[in-house]
Image (cartoon, one colour):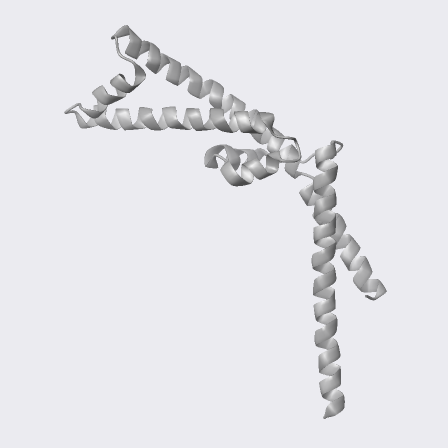
Length: 172
């Protein structure tokens, strides 16, 4: 690998490392947002549960009452409330998984199981940070090695193509 190719590979590695090092910070900002979403959904779900209890119903009985209504609005409202409850429970589960996971593993949890709305809003408002945590350094190192390897492989591929063209020109 020539000097220019090495420099390009190192620059690619540094750029990739910088980008990857932001993964733990993004996961942290996502965790903060998910906490806010859970707090708001908790108010709605607890209010629904309390209203159901006032009428001597549990949550499922109240949802069934909506579903069995002859009024389209009430049936739709029941479906909406069921979706809200499911999202609340899903976010609680995700918050638990993020809380018990090692900081290095949290970005993987987001890749597997992120809430679309929270993820999009986190991405929109994401503020990069300097990765001074162990997780940030690990992700930075992964990105550096990956970026360097991709640049090196692309450089080797370009070199082979150039070398093959030269050989074909000399043969003619």
